[in-house]
Amino acid sequence: MTDLIDIQAAVTAGKGADFKLEQLKIRAPKNNEVLVKIVATGMCHTDLIVRDQYYPVPLPAVLGHEGAGVITAIGDAVKDLAVGDHVVLSYGYCGSCKQCNSGNPAYCVDFFGRNFSGADPQGHNAICRHNHEAVHDHFFAQSSFATYALSLENNAVKVDKNVPLELLGPLGCGIQTGAGAVMNTLKVNPASSFVTFGAGAVGLSALLAAKICGATTIIAVDIVESRLELAKELGATHVINSKETDPVEAIKEITQGGVAFALESTGRTEILKQGIDALGILGKIAIVGAPPLGTLAQFDVNDLLLGGKTIVGVVEGSSVPKTFIPELVTLYQKGLFPFDKLVKFYDFADMNQAALDSQNGITLKPIIRIANSN
Image: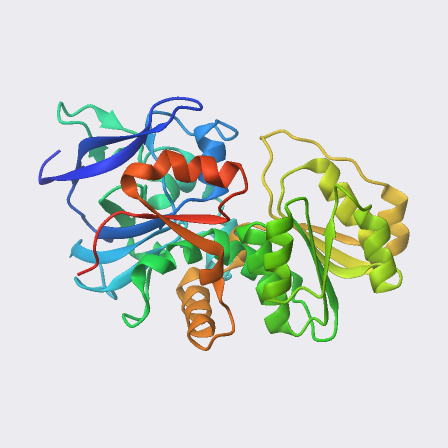
């Protein structure tokens, strides 16, 4: 490697291992790449399940995929971004396959490879130790648990400099996933009913989006009372503690027969079945929760058939980040999408505490402060 830049990064050494801060090096950007000084990075459930090897990303690796920062250098093929731009980093996609060309980059034919392979599409790494030993990277085309990250121009989204940059990273994945599942996939309509199974950051982002879409019956299901209280503050008309109440029965009573739209974000198959059972006639449920690869689920086929119900998987909120993330920023600026109520900030050195707090339900959306944006 030439033109190496010193960075500090959180390395995941092996399955279930703590994040460990290390001094590493990253190469300069080339072609359509941008180098971003990371201000802050959201910690997502996907970072933790990859650490725990639900998905077979090779380790050791630098994870992190909700980065926000300032461009400090660009490759010679970059056209629409410049040094000094504030950007949110989102998921990787090829930009040339049938799905990408039809406006569906979240379903890129090379999505898994570009986001979970631990290297670039050619199998190369950009990060190494000081002895030039490569460290797996390019996680979601960014690996942003680091002071600097390389991204492609197509997944670096320019944002308004008047909005606090340290807040915006989660728009690149978790917040975009919940809001997009409602707005882009389910297309929740005015005066309809909506339920989120799971009132974490993704579920509550979906709740906020359902309110924006005009749903008038908005239900949150969880087992953590503090999350249900926050759901009410954010616009839920009803909350259900599923440890105390059968959610399917409660939802059918609230909606007089079944809910029109549902979101499942827990990744638990028994909760997915509850979501399907709670749907009304022609109801639709979006699945965003990710269990280990190979997980199978069960449901009553005739219930699905006779009810005309729809089950749809959703990646990244079916969003086009270049347009959807700025739209979410505008909604936030207008006070309609207060996702800042979901976050808690941690210092870079406290990443493992952030992960523990997230797993224990104490923090909905940790954001790791990595550098100052000035």
